[in-house]
Length: 144
Image (tube, rainbow, N blue to C red):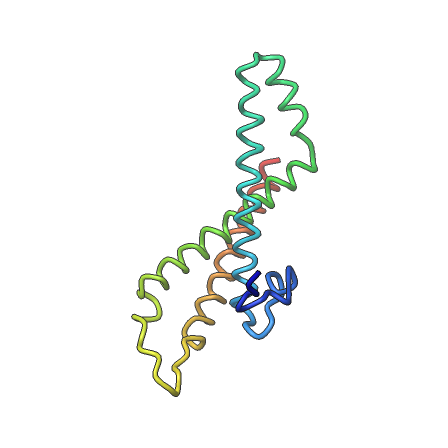
């Protein structure tokens, strides 16, 4: 059996921890977590909505099961996760296509870094997502 060229010695800690990559690595991890959370919500939404096929009594029972203050907080967390995931996804798409930090350059020593250009964008993403989440939170509080 051949050994792996680059073993993963850090395990899950390496996936979650930012390590030397810093802030952008935390954004990456948060983007993954919010994506998985949104997927879980989507699957639960499909499951609850599919009870409508079984008749009005089944639909009422399913809706009663997912109503209450705990689920209202959960709905807000889904909204906040969506706000961050959407804004960060737009940032990632614009960076990937070279619109925000420019086209990639040939890696010639001394290596140029784009951290100085990406860090302000990452901070802006967090601010915009926070404003959207707070705005949505006020909406959740005033409508309930």
